[in-house]
Length: 188
Image (cartoon, rainbow, N blue to C red; front, side, top):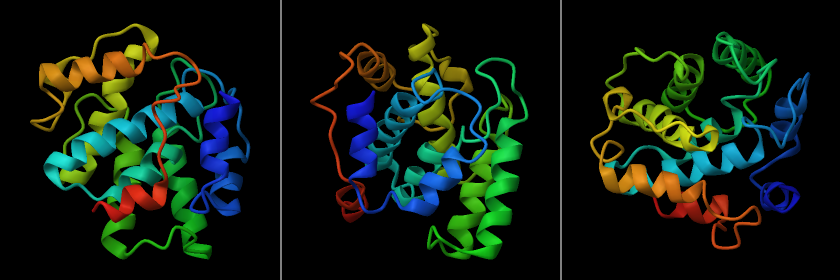
């Protein structure tokens, strides 16, 4: 897990402001089910889906890093998305440290606020891709994602669901899953 966290820390897009936001009042372990490995899986899944549907990679990246930042427990914390969105909105009002435009900020806040609501609704492809990338990573807790609860055409495919399963079966160090956030955004 430490090696994977270093992937983020060594990337200059993982700023001290983002690190502080994630770690502020953190009450669950970084190596738990909603920790660094999950964030990086969500990022990788979002990256793969966005190649097909052109979802905003910058929003997807910040969603992956921030969506579980206000969890207070691993299971049964149904309000964590709303807390994270609310806290992020307050922080961005003081300092737009993410450098997002108004539309991107709106997408990110909505995606975070509603990501754990199974019947959430949105017609925005970026928000849908955020939600799908999180739900596809249910394999980490030995739960197969239900295609009926996914939003995007590409996420619902057997191929994508199997990719998510394989992502969670790769050994801890995951040498084959390396990336730079800057490179990810350049592919946009």
